[in-house]
Length: 242
Image (tube, rainbow, N blue to C red; front, side, top):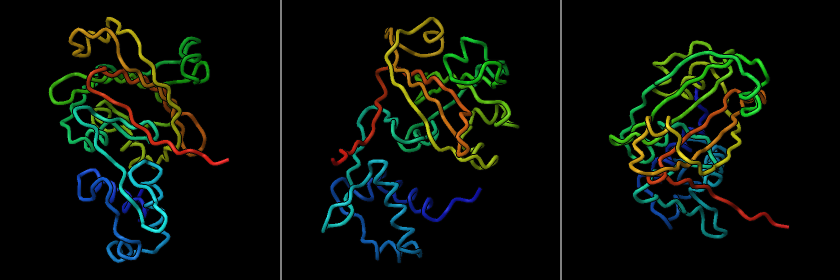
């Protein structure tokens, strides 16, 4: 599915902010300048900037313009809470060298325990994938994914080793819209210790996600189990008036 113009501009500006072409506290070029640079309409620029505002990269300042408020997180990998971002996208943003190993790939039916935990209907046919994420030589993340089998046709271990979201969006044309998340700290179990380089830690940061497509169907349930020392989770909050 081809990306719209405003998405291309959003991604380009986001990349430039993350890579220091626009520094913290600086103003982005004016709307008129950006219109000329990207050869597009004012509405397209405003949609791109709106995305950057929502994701906490910039803030509109009355009478001045659009100011960069993004600051990189030192010594940790910053995973976003408010946005929906794949592991590969996070790794690129943080300039890391990621490796993914698929250690399990199978179909199953949701029993009562899994249905109650995940929210999938009892008996749903699911594709279960376990992947170990290695960053700069250390095994730091264990992802346990469940996908509705009927919505991920053609998904293979080779695709899962690269980027499932890229496959869903670019090959299947799925629109990934909403992810409900819960972050907890849990005691590491024997499987965690076997899969990850915990180096004496006995706990993990666990991000549990229920993710929905544009039809309102929950197509994915995931537990992402993180080494506690190397990761931070960031979001941007705004205070609502009245």
